[in-house]
Image (cartoon, rainbow, N blue to C red; front, side, top):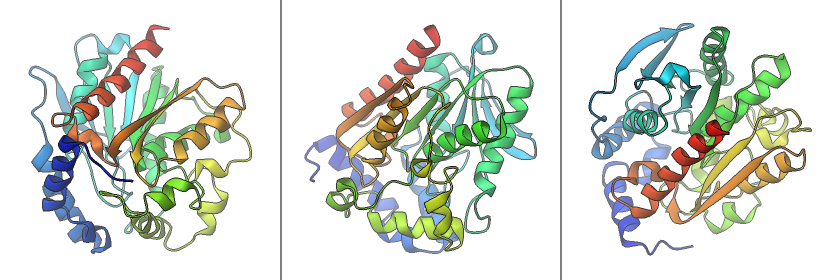
Amino acid sequence: MLVTDPEVLRFIADTEAAYPAEANGATAQDNRRMYDAMCAVFRAPRPAGLPVRDESVAGVPVRRYTPEGAHARPFLLYSHGGGFVVGGLDSHDDVCAELAVATGCEVISVDYRLAPEHLFPAQIDDVVAVWSVEAAHGRQGIAIGDSAGGNLSAGLCFRMRRTGGPMPLAQVLIYPGLGGDMDAPSYIDNAEAPMLRTQDLKTYAGMLTGGDMELRRSNPEISPLVAQSFAGLPPAFIVTADIDPLRDDGPAYLKALQAEAINAEWRNEPQLIHGYLRARHRSARAAESFRAICNWINAFLAR
């Protein structure tokens, strides 16, 4: 599949100038250096007057974005993308800030440990630890994340179901990797897609598990789509990019949830590619998708 939208093509060119495709095969340190440089190219100023503070929750670094009146609303626990190998509080800082202002919710961004220095389940353990502390204060929240963070948000729901912990009100998954079938059309048709290739996914999967691929075939906390049952999970809003090998994970998860009569919605974005949230100030398509995510959260909370 080909991108023809000129705004998206410019976004791809600007991204690859700072973060070339070969970065995904570089050492973790070099990959992070290039990824951070690329994120800085697109980072927008935070909305004026938004209180932001860094702190530690359960020993995990987090960043809180707390608009006025936020404590009267559920919080959003944000897990960032980056293949579990790159990214952090700064890479998604502007996304989280704008999400907080658009929804009126406190956004708590989790700086979970990264692979390959920290193998699975370190990442989901960190997200669960922060979630559990916040929920222990009697607060309700929504799990939200993009890419690897979408995986962690879904994984959080499976962990809460398994342990009987407090379940998120909803899961908002933005171009998530959910452990889908790599023979699905999107993995083949978009194998060489800009920003993320099927081979990159295999590389990151190996780094996360130390090469233990059996984990990905058996554990829904790392591959939600391998679950034997989807009963008891919360409502979901799943957003996918059409030109992305991960695209077909979205409708597969939708179908699994709906089979259990769970309220789930799926939105696929034509002409958009993996990582398009960073293009929301450069692409009308990406901007509209970000608005749709914020609008879904507001409508869900209004209900």
